[in-house]
Amino acid sequence: MKKVIIIRYSEIYLKGKNRGFFERAFENNLNRALSSFEHELIKQCGRYTVREFNEEEIEEIIEKLKKVFGLHTLSVAYETNSDMDSIFEAAKLVARTSGTFKVESHRGDKKYPLTSVEISKKLGGMLLDYAKGAISVDVHNPSFSVRVDIRENGKALVFGEFIQGANGMPVGTAGKGVLLLSGGIDSPVAGYMMAKRGMNVDCLHFHSYPYTNLQAKEKVVDLARILSEYTCGTKLCTVSVTHIQEAIHEKCKPELMITLLRRFMYRIAERHAKRIGGQCLITGESLGQVASQTIEGITSSNSVVEELPVLRPLIGFDKNEIIDISVKMGAYETSILPFEDCCTVFLPDFPAIRPKLTDILREEAQLDVEGLIEEAFATIEKIQL
Image 1 (cartoon, rainbow, N blue to C red):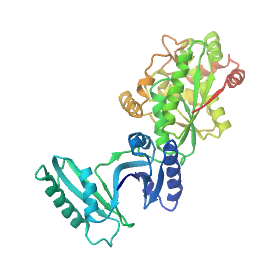
Image 2: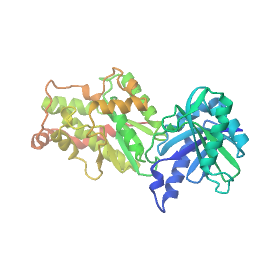
Image 3: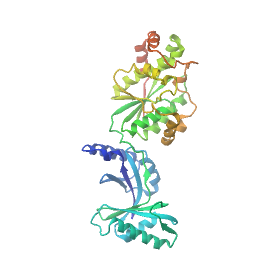
Image 4: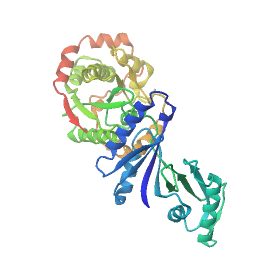
């Protein structure tokens, strides 16, 4: 008898003739997540089992697997021979010493001499006799369950619980996007949400050093590293926009600073994405959350994007919903560290809430847009995570 981990996938089961493409991507991502552990991954009839691992590392392995998108549930099971005595020995390890229980059985091997109902009845009776009154049967609301899966290879899997996975689609099955990663709460969550739909996510961060300090940059590196645990690795590029902000501050109306800066960010992000094969931009904008995220502000910023779509997975979320996901993915405590980002530099007292595009274009005409963009590209730094 030995421990194995059963993995069940999520939406992949809805796929038709191209299911193999999604299964291969999922399998690759599972192996990548477990690359630092000894293991063997076996595919069996629409699910996988992890074998030959060090049982002392099982908790770490489970935590890694829970971050693989496409994984619906997993279970730690005992693999044993399929005779009832062997199944009973494994069931004793799964069962609790008190409370109510039920047995759920499934026969993958239809030639097995007992039906699923008969397996459950017999094993339940054996557990009752063994417990000597300490446990009782409750098939409607048990405090624990013992589950038996009879396989075609003469083995049985015995387990107790389903551990929830990340769900979604395997990363690498839905193209590549460039995430505008700030040091806040929202943008890492936006990247997480797009990775959950199967997208490869690379990150682009704008900084204003020396107005912002190096700790602010390290915070973003840490956020990208947290995100990379869900994206099967990511690349982070940083770009200085200090010179752009100085130019806007010197020549343009202060209330339009944020909108003008964001237009530069979108231009730079789109050109960067096209250089690295990105197919869209991803932002953490939520409608009405701040001055630049009104529909007028979004329209003014978005109008400079020439070809690529801009995906805003959080556009209809409120702040508490975003925070809940940030906590779930383990980014929240890093996101709230008190280090400023570039949008706080030269921040006007009263930023325009409903900027008019005609006003934006008039102010922008005072700037050397192309020259400032080229200067920004000269500052790109690449960080592999």
